[in-house]
Image (cartoon, rainbow, N blue to C red; front, side, top):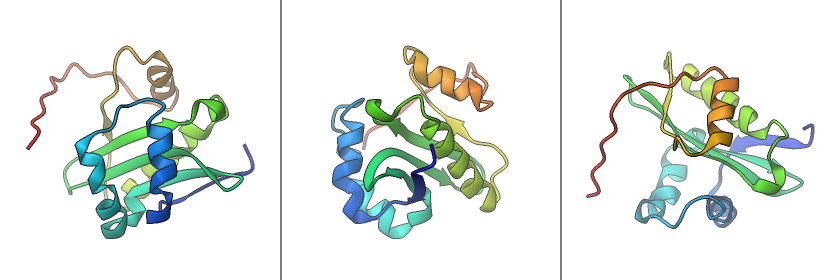
Amino acid sequence: MSNVIYRDAAVADIPQMLAVWRQFWAPQRYESNLERKIRNDPASVCVAECDGLVVGTVIGGYDGWWAWIYRVAVHPDYQRRGIGSGLLSEMHRRLAARGAEAACLIASPANAAMAGLLRRVGYKEKEDRRFSLVF
């Protein structure tokens, strides 16, 4: 899709980012940290913009050991146009520039569309266990 721009997210994009996320996820407490993430590390939050609208998001993180990718989302009206692949490609490039050699991502096994996208761009499923703790 030629009129899509992949760029750092800005604080002003947050309402549109949240609108995309609401297509897939209920509100989460940690979303209140999004503004801080954008201000402190703008290159780790990327949006896909089409005709002035935020239509996709991806967040990356790299601690020198592991690279992780979060919140890959493309608004349903813009799916199947290569935007998800473009977002992942852009974040892979950004993480590699920081020294990352691989990236991890957690996706629901029930999300067949996401699983298909991840396989198309080269991700492999792992049998690792997942734990989380909310502070």
